[in-house]
Image 1 (tube, rainbow, N blue to C red):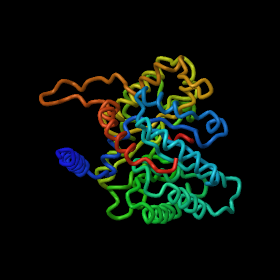
Image 2 (image 1 turned 30 degrees about the vertical axis):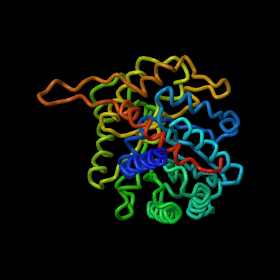
Image 3 (image 1 turned 180 degrees about the horizontal axis):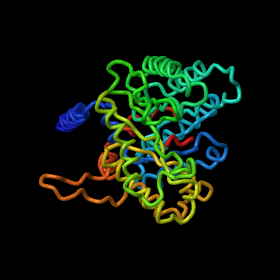
Length: 362
């Protein structure tokens, strides 16, 4: 006699718990992103071939809470099925997936209709995922390149049309857009944002995507001088000021210390990684590390031992505490904050699982 009442009570309790969950907004989404990593699981033949869902488990165990899945070429049925496999693996292990379209396969054809190609690509992907996988994000263009990179009006037009069509399919899909000039933070203000888009639209920008590169005989980072640190802080502050002005949030889609990070890291690399990670975390800007193959051996299914200290520094750096001032409190690293929020995010993802299976502008 009491069993139906107990069951009803449990259902009501569960219903109230679900109802109490705040609606997902871009600001909450950014908080859950934490620290992630760029992956080629859908872009290169090797990345596609070597992918194993247990890789996602390894990434989550390491403290990574999102992946930026770079993908190129046509949205064929086989590629869409593979993307579904990647998204489901992320949902299973509590990692947020972001599909990032590398819209550059037309680069050898100057007559190609870049705008139409980008829009049609996302129409296919948006229809395929529909309203499933609520934490799946769409990064519309990995880095605005070629014709779009030199025509801000064209880039804004692509974004406007693509956002409109995606949200006609799924009104709640989180979308990232990047400015021109390889997503430099200095060009965030050039983007035309849809009215009232703060709750679903995030900006993606880059800083040192492949580390400090030599430019005109000089490096933007040598030993971490005051001038070098200030230059980095100034670029991050540009993004922060843009956020304050527009009410939108942003995400660094990729940064690194250089190709040599497969090797045992040097003291300058570790110093640079520590400073970059600490500054982004103090600014509460989530970021992805570029890129997974430098730290993870997909063929072996194991982390590369040599760059392990560097990766750990980029995920959970040991940051200097602010100077002791009355009422001044140290900022917690974003990766730790994300760690607290991820289990809830993971449960949200699992409950909503689908039924079907650069150039450095420094």
